[in-house]
Length: 152
Image (cartoon, rainbow, N blue to C red; front, side, top):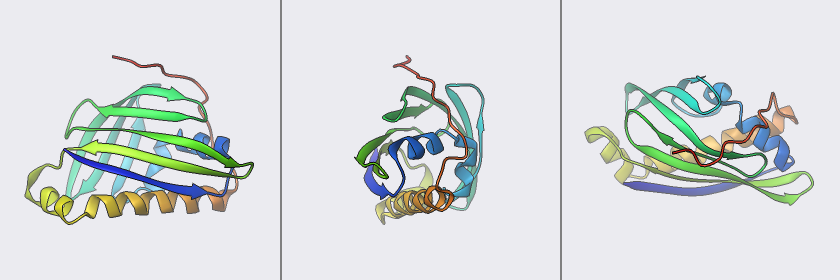
C-alpha cells in the first residue's frame, strides 16, 4: 500500500474551494490522466482514467462529506484506493487544501512508477492545476452542500 500526503494553499475562500471540489464531473479539467468522472448519485462515482498508458475504470463511494471541511472516499471496484481531502481556513480569501490518499499500484508499470515517485508528483501537479483552475475563475462553477456521514 502506498500513501500520499500533500497540500496546497489556494487564494479563494474555503467555501469556494470546497464547492468547486464537489463538482466531480469537472475533475478532468485539472486531474492529469482523468478522462471522465460520472456522478451516479450523492455517494457513488465512476472514474475513467489513463494510468501507465492503459485505460482503467473504477467506482468509488463517498463515505463522508461535510461542507467546507472534508470529503472522504474509497474505491468499490478496480484497484484499491481511499482517501480524504480537507479544507482549512487561513484567511478570508485563502485556504489550504490537504489530500491524504492510500492506493495499491497494479502491474509492473504502476509499481515502477510508484517506486520512482510518479504518483506523488502527479497528485502535487493535480493540486496545482486545481489551484490555477479555481483561482482563475474566482468563484466555484457549482456546489453540492449536502452531507454524507460515515457510510458502511
